[in-house]
Amino acid sequence: MYVRTDMKSGAACYTVQSGDSLSTISQKFYGTQSAAGVQKIYYSNMETIGANPNLIYPGQKLYIPS
Image 1 (tube, rainbow, N blue to C red):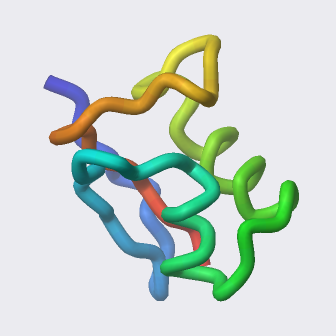
Image 2 (cartoon, rainbow, N blue to C red; image 1 turned 60 degrees about the horizontal axis):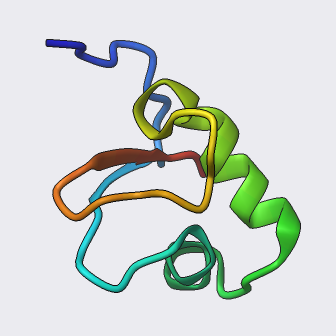
């Protein structure tokens, strides 16, 4: 089991829901579906998501940087 110990104050942990994409998650947390928000989430979660940022699964827990 991998436990994040480097979360900074203001960061969040989000559990992926059915129908979510990195764009919709970016919209929820940053108010925009911009590439910058999507990349920020993806690069913070590459170990969880894997090589394809378009493949996320319900139940995955993602670190959302502030």
